[in-house]
Image (tube, rainbow, N blue to C red; front, side, top):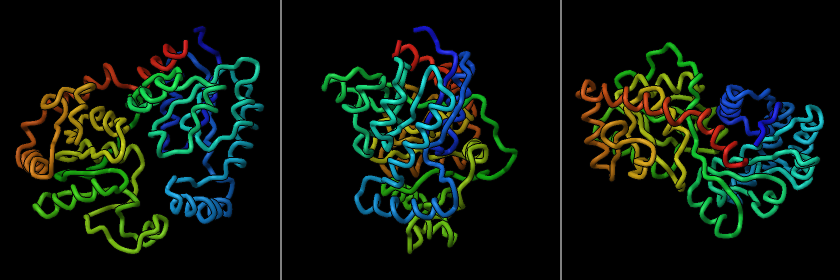
Length: 338
């Protein structure tokens, strides 16, 4: 494939990952422009989305929190404004067919990269596949869609090698978890608290701040030592600074962004997935646990003898920079869609 000169990334604003992906394509020679389709135009619209769409999505169980017509209209306006050679959509399950048809006009290359399992989204592969090349981080989704006749690439998430790490001591001496609460995560952290392990979570879903409780629709505390949301540079520092950091997956087969971020910043990462061996060498670059008893043992070891894991930190970072950056993923997408 001849690489296009200009690229428009249309993406959720989630943690600024769209910017990291854009920098990766920039390294490959693209002029990158971006559009975040989930950013509200005003505080009033943000409140409306919260009540009219997010609450309804929670009740339906599909996580919907946006008006498809509104975000599609704005995304279409951005495509018309910049007239890119290549449109890369990240997730995009809320976008309408009218958007996809416009994006694909004049044989423009359009690609979609899903970083969530399709079953938890409103993504319609039959519709989108008529207009766009497909990729997903989920091996299961890739296999299912191939069996249904779709051409789809399986491209995992990655690490932003250009990311800056805050100069902070937050997380020092602790076992950290940075991310959203899910039942499996809550039970694991509760087991560590009960065992006396110095663990702390960061994120609005854990925080007992009154504003965080309100915006996550919670009335009770989760009972886990917690702090509020932190931006990417601080999250990376917290993972690196701690004795260990936890990566606990929910109902998903794809590996979270945290898998590559924690390794990329040189953290002692403790993960719940033995199949991480597809990316990192368990025991040498990452630690894998099976059950709360083993998790407690690993965390106690990391807290008591941090020197035992100095080489693991370095090996994880080296492996990530050599194989698992967003630039590697951008190359993989381009190769798959050639």
